[in-house]
Length: 272
Ligand SMILES: C[S@@+](CC[C@H](N)C(=O)[O-])C[C@H]1O[C@@H](n2cnc3c(N)ncnc32)[C@H](O)[C@@H]1O
Image (cartoon, rainbow, N blue to C red; front, side):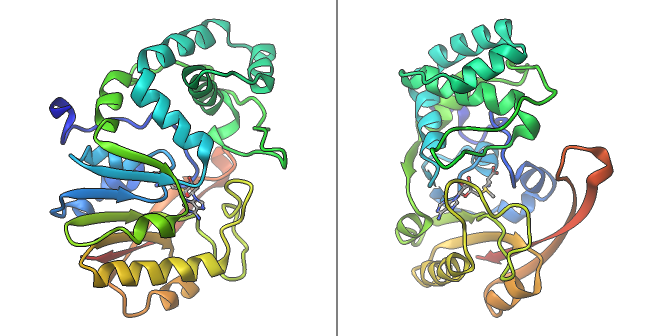
């Protein structure tokens, strides 16, 4: 596994709120000594794949997502084989057939999620009340990317413990020597943004307060933490007196149409 330590890898998923832009454009924010890296809101793992640390805990409440990482780690060749089949067969009818299907093996389940993620509308992950993925087909038709490197991704993940957990269980283990990247869904206390519903469950304002409390206690145990959130008054107030506040601007596309590109301000709180 030594070959991938410190190498930059490209995340294999596109995820709402993904932080590739942050770690690419502001790498200095993450340039912190640590012996273990913890990412309790994993999503596409943009920061993990940029740092490829020697030891990590990667966690998310989305069990399908975590199972996908486990399958890529343990059966990457099988996952790749399924993806090549999806690439050859991809069309509108095939997309909906795969969306309806219930594959059994870990590798075929992972390839289903990766295929749908790459070809669905805007890379969105959304499920109905029965937990079934219900995003329509998008315009992109590439299923296998030139940048795919599942062998190295699998090697990087071999250094990581993968879990389906609420953030509190994971952050409560952080202490001296740990770097924790905390990237929750962005909720503001009047709940007017488009990103609050990630899985079957909402990330509420009470969760934001619970998260801030976890960050504070982990910091007291000696962990170093980087927290991201919306640059919103209520978040600035929530983290008042906690760490160094850095305001960043970026361009984002919400609906997938160029016309709805906008500039967004994000807050990074560096507790190091
Ligand atoms: C903003 S995304 C993380 C994006 C990630 N940093 C990336 O680069 O792709 C937030 C993630 O938090 C997960 N999540 C939502 N509620 C959670 C909770 N209570 N505990 C842990 N993860 C949660 C969601 O499933 C989602 O994957």
